[in-house]
Length: 283
Image (cartoon, rainbow, N blue to C red):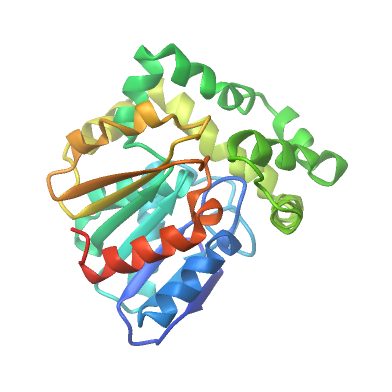
């Protein structure tokens, strides 16, 4: 069990929308969507995920089983039976996983800049372009060096990653400064790398094979999938095909001129789409 720090907007008795951030970000990445969803009458909550921000940073538990259980636990701890679960990047992996392994707590699903994990695995194995795009993940497997680089020069590498993965003009100065500072919080650099290390190392372990088998169950709730057309990290060609693991209404929106951070690069559009999806107006 891990304690999570959260930020929220909206009425305490509103339908719950849980917003899960990715790397190298924290709850603040959802600032626009928190306000939009709260103004629309939803109880919007954005946690710092395990290993980030003010949340607990235990030495283990950075596997998708445990992390998706964290998501289910958050829904229950917030007093809700279920929630609309929204995830970006690694938060998207958790959203896909929670909807599959803990279907009772996810009423609707929205995923940004992250294909279904089985679709991503398929693309990495068979599409050289997606394999090349994932090159930083190879560096993240090294012991200690990635952590040192993330911390060096006040997190300059974090800014490099944001610029290389984002669309034109992203990030602005405040976003870069906040993300760089967030990775300087003691423990965050190491914990954030552990997520990636589990993702790669689990491929050769029985627990990893079991995880992939469980994901074959598919997602049984309406799913909105948002993808930047200019995302150089999770390619648009990889996003296509995720529908194969959704056994419910599904919509893929590809946003022109947008990179890996649609919720910030196209904040207005994404906020409107999430409100409509949470209301059941899209699917």
